[in-house]
Image (cartoon, rainbow, N blue to C red; front, side):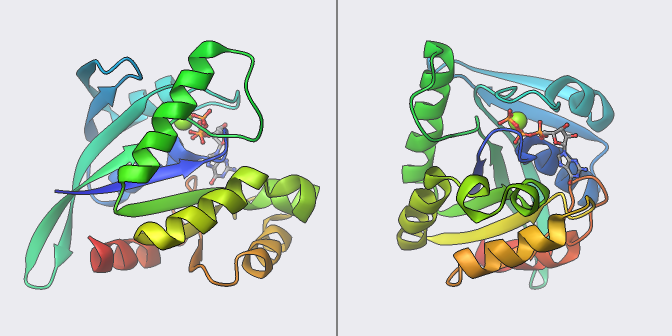
Length: 202
Ligand SMILES: Nc1nc2c(ncn2[C@@H]2O[C@H](COP(=O)(O)OP(=O)(O)OP(=O)(O)O)[C@@H](O)[C@H]2O)c(=O)[nH]1
Ligand SMILES: [Mg+2]
């Protein structure tokens, strides 16, 4: 089964996208497969509303492991399953917490194994902060690496917020080679285009 890995800096909306896209594809509940950085695996079933309350929030580094759901999309005359994998946020520099460092290492390892990489940026934050502060070295490095690895595209998230249009312009100028979809994990804006693209690459 194809794995689509969601990556990006902390707080950009990776987990919100995982859950919101699952809802968009018709799920009311998710069976989350959680893989911690020490290698243990467990599953948890939640309604999407409960999972959102539990797993999404404004503090960075909420997600500290890989967590995935199996989803289905119409492809040709049939349907195809794929695993959408959410990861711990990665950032520039070396974090003070060993737990966060281990979680980031797990994300980077997953990047090297993924065939489809969905890189999320916070368009509203980038609009506010501008190019040099808003787009991290880690974002540029990731784009360079992932483009050579396989299917790779960007989601400019939080398009529902003020400043996101400016952020989107900055993103498209900074990543001219990369297909970019403006989305909102809150309103599901842009999900139709993402769904069509994912169906092409899985
Ligand atoms: N307005 C708005 N807020 C969003 C959107 N997507 C996510 N958020 C908010 O952004 C914050 C971070 O969302 P998360 O999904 O937890 O971010 P994450 O990238 O998984 O963060 P880590 O797990 O810490 O790496 C939460 O407060 C979300 O409600 C969006 O499209 N629009
Ligand atoms: Mg998260």
